[in-house]
Image (cartoon, rainbow, N blue to C red; front, side, top):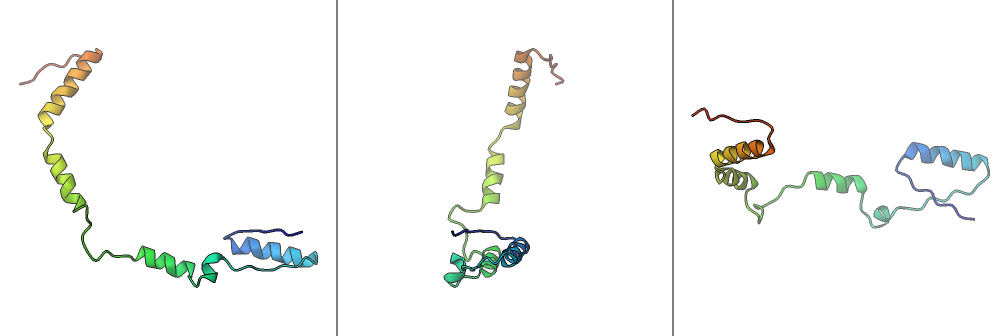
Length: 98
């Protein structure tokens, strides 16, 4: 019979291996796919975390886009619509202070 155990917790695996050896069970370690391809998982993680783009995104500057979106809004019209919605729902009557 063959039993395959997979875990990233090295301490738990070490305990299982020690128990298996006490029970005279043969333990064979198989290399993970990333190790067999010559890719170190930690090195790959660091490479991803330290990635810096060499050019601007093809989508443009997100901060500039957000500023432009906010400039397009007419705050007065939004507030007027909110007043109308509240009055329609019958929650409260809003008096004009102008």
